[in-house]
Length: 474
Length: 59
Image (cartoon, rainbow over all chains, first blue to last red; front, top):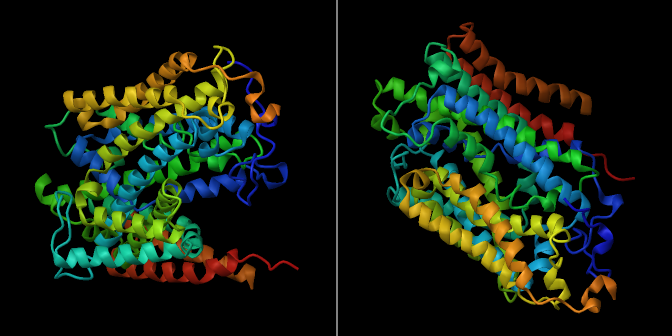
């Protein structure tokens, strides 16, 4: 790899704001690694973890060894990606993904990226609202709650609960979500222990076998890759953040690259322990139903958690869903606002909230979360490959770095094609191959590599700028 | 005050995780008691931890 560019390459006349959105983070604002460990641990212990664990068993039919080994190896790969792909760029450029994309691809490209990002964020937040709302099932026995088999709204009562929760989350996000963010940080250690408690209790109820023994496959009619499905999902469920470089926004505040190890806290507490404990709950219910998977699928998440941890578990479901839906909704609002600057942030957040709540009404988004997360990563991660090529390989291969910033913000069609072409091939593979349709996470790495390779080739066709057109050289 | 809050907050976390661990180990058989203790730990955590984590106001 060529010598990376340094902060001095950045425009001297960039606007300054408290968040350093368009300027490199100055040394005084940088933080030690310790600041990032707690943040990542909290961020990756979310309401959706309650769904992902059971879905490994129900949707993919994986068993104990595949699950355990796949999670260990996949999460390790995720941590290594953060450490060796994202953190080096974050701590050298010290700019957000948006700022770097604007320099490489132009403002209109960022608007397009924001549209995709905002919509996907809305559906993700909608899943979290679904999870939060499901906790009210045991408290409102007259209301039909969605089960793991549900795809459509289950009735008026369910819709009313989702709309109330969606409206409350939207209101808080529109007003600024500092309080919820504080509650999220406060709840993180407790929430992790509640996940663990659920796992311990159901293990006890199953007669205390080992975790591997307890997680015997509940479905034998599925073969989506076992270990490999779990491995790629665990590695790439946050592909938009590491390979896709969205976490440049966070890691640019790190004093050095070692902060890139911090996501290990989130991966091994949230994406390992919490997923395993949630999977154990489903395994217990299959056993309790005499091995009848369909009967176990008909149990709602709220009933499962209530059975294991009582009211504490239900509070955990609500808080876990709420605290993660809120920042997601807030980001979706910002994305919409960036797209339509005429909207105020409040209006944009209300719009995003309406879309989220609409998505939350349909349990299909939550119950097919494994598919959705894979598609989410496949769509957004390739943008990170364009940034990676621009940052590390451009000079070696004779490509103009930060092309748009040297063309008065012109639109980088090479980047657009590099993003879209692999996605079109990926979409074809998705509809053609049942294995890809079952585990869309298999597409992420091929699309990322293809996008990088495409940009490397197509960027050579871009018009070469005049020597004095770069803002830094002015 | 802060160190007492820290003690209570850590105690709260113990109240959340120790009963399920005891239940798994067979040392506690009353599921209702386990859940009540966890709830007490939860309430205690959300009361004590904010005091423990409260930052000193700037001088």
